[in-house]
Image (cartoon, rainbow, N blue to C red; front, side, top):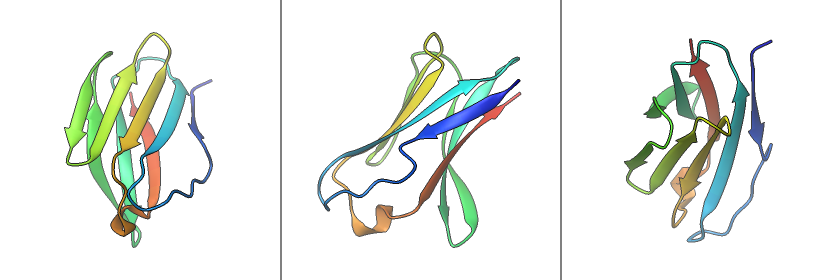
Length: 93
């Protein structure tokens, strides 16, 4: 049974601080994991994390993927008001 779980469900941080979101997954035939930043109902692709140990950086966003722990993290450094959004993760088979 394939599934993806995110935590925490919601997060409130002070502007200028750091935030960390996690995504654990149990997916067979896993190829890549994507983090989406959803604003105004338009999903975008900040990251495509393809293999274990990879760290992708996009400005102040840093994504990592641990294939052994089946866990991806998204770190947002020095948060800004514009970071307020819904962040989603999903796997690609």
